[in-house]
Image (cartoon, rainbow, N blue to C red; front, side, top):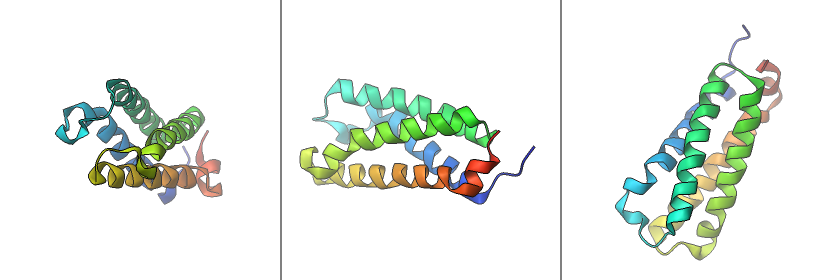
Length: 119
């Protein structure tokens, strides 16, 4: 089994944290004003992200692609909030953190050392 590069480990941690936040989003009281369909779509993306993080841990190629797709969808979901569609400043800041975090996951997942490690 190939060794896991540090970039993959950092990507796993960021993806797992972002995905866990997506999963618990319905329990956070500051999410008022966000349509329920958006919140529950985030929960689905969170579950898929956790599956992707587990697959990345095992260095599976399918997990690399799942991670990229989930991260892009998370960025697309959070971008409007970052650009002012979020009803509060707190939600705008959280959206910005989400966009930056998931973009970093993509970058870390596709650097050459990470790409070569996946089977």
